[in-house]
Length: 98
Image (tube, rainbow, N blue to C red; front, side, top):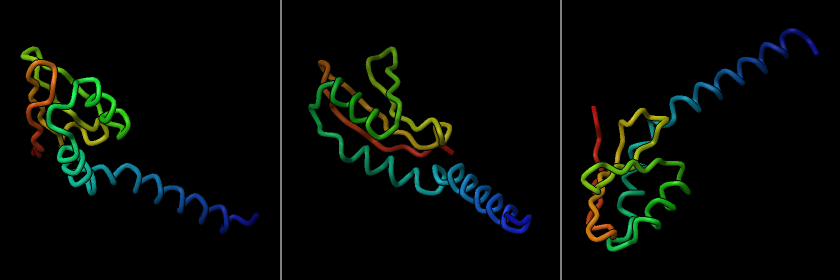
């Protein structure tokens, strides 16, 4: 393998790595918004937790019983604010944090 071929392989690898790191900031908002809208009102907490996990998101429950779904790769920039009532989803609202 020539040194030029190695440089090309390394260059392509670097570009792919950069794309992987930047993608959450480019497409993450739309993906979180779609996820938030896909949640069924009156879904049990366990179903919401499972859906978040399937999409690679984290569900953080707050002390007041509500929750936030966020993508750790975007450092919490795109979130889905959840309100629960009697252990079931009452509302889900997308939020963009500057």
